[in-house]
Length: 275
Image 1 (cartoon, helix red, strand yellow):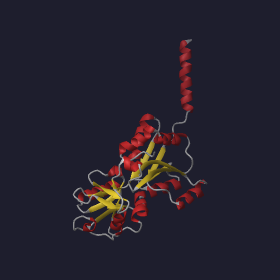
Image 2: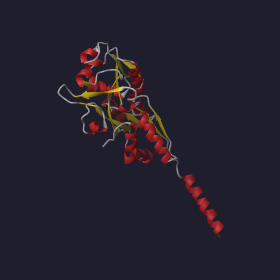
Image 3: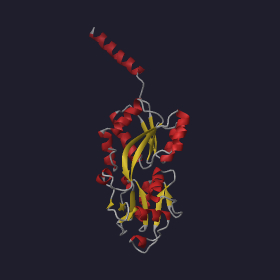
Image 4: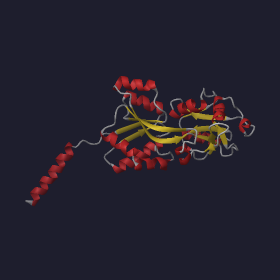
């Protein structure tokens, strides 16, 4: 009798397992600024839930948003807010303007070569440098040398955010565009007179420049405290976007990202919690 019950129990488990759908693979695409963070989230989450597969790729915020619109990704990561024109395209296809989920905060860091004596810059000076109005380091208290500019490609959310909120004009034609913040950091680390910008988590091997809102303000480095207190002038949210409200496995993953465990990963990678 016991053997019969054991056999029936095993068969019941097999039947339940056979009819239990496997977790859907979740695809995440977009921001190069966020790719290390998102990969870390996915790695830890898949260890916690071994049946779940999460595929993460970069390519830039604009690329991720395009993928969300055409249906080739479940989640888009973006280091800038979605544009109204992009939301309209979502509306046309999915009858929804999409769902915006702030999932971390970042302070866009100004990168200088470690040998550069300049310690701080105002937003106005940074704008002048990247528009090409300020061409020599001596104009901002540095050596009598030409400034070399390094930035992101125009599909990057960081490129767009920095252009709209700091440069406030067109980038100088002399600005070398590079595919990813890590490439910008690498270029500046090798160029004594270089300057670049990007997410704070990538700023190894270069000098962090303190930033002040205007000439009368104090300058701040991007730290957990200055981000939390809204003192660092170039602060932004990092987002996940979906075409509609999340359900099932996607909702479960996003809920974990926003949980204390998920936000702990944000700090470990070098960004800042969303709250």
